[in-house]
Amino acid sequence: MSNISQEDIGLVLDFMKERKSDFERFLSEDRGLSAHAATFILEDLEFHLKHEQVES
Image (cartoon, rainbow, N blue to C red; front, top):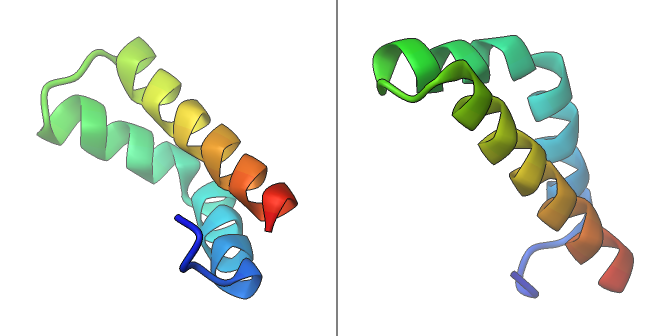
């Protein structure tokens, strides 16, 4: 992910934080994942984005 700017990563993280329940609902209701799996995926993505932000 090194081609992504710090600003872009920050924008995505802010958006995810604001809309986390919408993402979880989409993944669980619309895509058939369990609520636990949806939450895990979002938390994992958030972790990796923050890690990328720190490394850059």
